[in-house]
Length: 428
Image (cartoon, rainbow, N blue to C red; front, side, top):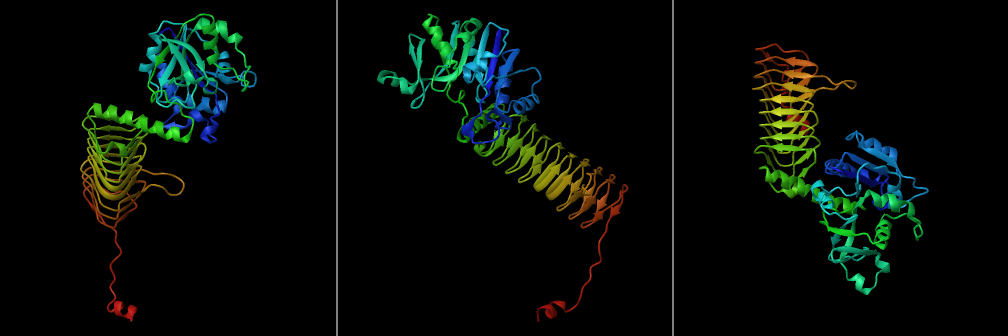
């Protein structure tokens, strides 16, 4: 596609009231800027991101996901503002789309609308019921006549409900001819990209408006905006899954991050959180359970269970207050109140309530391996490293400190001692 894309991500975002750069605040598991770059790369092989505030940090975080993006440092001292941001960018295609790094809800499909309009400049426009506080875009005969700030608008112009959404498509000759002419002769002493539109209009060039959805082009400038965008993103994620056949119980109570995959006839009950690169296949995740960076296949989790990163459950059931961490369970039942960390447990095995794999000695983590058809009694401690072979019974209350061979009963208990008459003596 004959398109270059510039993403503006240089601002401080002071209204966020945070030491973290605005574009690195996360929505549904990923930084806002990640979404802008991801959608841009669907349309272009020439994507540039303009940075300034904490540029090294922003670049480092984005390079975790993308290795073929151009990062450009804005000369903010000499050329501040949106117009100054695009001055130092070399593009290689005829059309140049300018996006913002704080618009995480923009999608590539909607951006294609800019390419369907042949004019020299296409600018995004939103119709607001209450445009108070926004500059107006004056449109006549499907053409942008001018952009006017609210404080400079006359009574007739203030009636206009069309406002600038901040995304533009320029033909490359606009940048070549007009960027050198940009001036910072304004109250803020900044170079504005909107001045390119004004200069082009004065020279008789056509500027087309593209009406876009407000929620998709919503910019995030505050923690309130961040929360609002999170809700919109969550609705989008869950609606897509429901269209594919996933059942959600009270979807507004669940939290599903963007990297999550759900397949088959899965059920996600109320209060569930699915985090990171989790994959759920033909499984049910019950009320108030959390699954992070793990794979659940043909299994049930919860209610009130937690599956921590690097775990795999296949044809298994874990119940309430069971925590799994960095473990593989295949055909296993762990009904309640257990911690299984750094473990491999094979099919047919049953884990009793209160069982703990003691995987950490204060310095290192160790592995617990449990074979097939093992019955682990309640309140058992498995002190890793330890191997439990197939067809073993471990009695309730046992502390296992060494490997257990196949076919045996493992039991360790302190003998019960009874003292006659102690109750009355104690309370007398």
